[in-house]
Length: 139
Length: 80
Image (tube, rainbow over all chains, first blue to last red):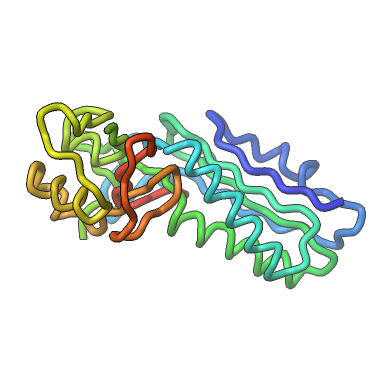
């Protein structure tokens, strides 16, 4: 049976993902975990703050999962994003897919994260020592 | 008519919701709403992009707005 998991949570638990994506008909699982990086363009980040328009974000994440399943033969698909304050090295997003063969899950995993970043209504604020910036807001 | 605000849009307006019917004209379409927003808050014109969602779907400029619609301003997204 095909499985799709789409969630917005307070904390990402990467350890859970293997069991969630594991599937008897899959020969491989690909997972991408996005984490908080300490430096942005040479400036030291203190923490990040994520905010979501939750019902729309979930809707868009479901659409992305459906699109990926139409493009590749996948058994499981997962998109999960965290909201709230996040410290350096904390996971903030996890996406993944399992498929019979590795090519489909590698390609799907890339599509899931790239498309999530393009259009899911979630916003990231970078907090530096003396200022804070909404990422990508201005050209 | 309520308009939900997120991210930098919340900072530009200084609140999380705009009530458009309080003493102002109610926009009939997405493009009218954008024009109204930019004239009231010129900072919106400086953003990399400005999208509007109607009932939690991205809406093009020609989409008309109704009283019961859930409307939101979607400034440039930056998840992941």
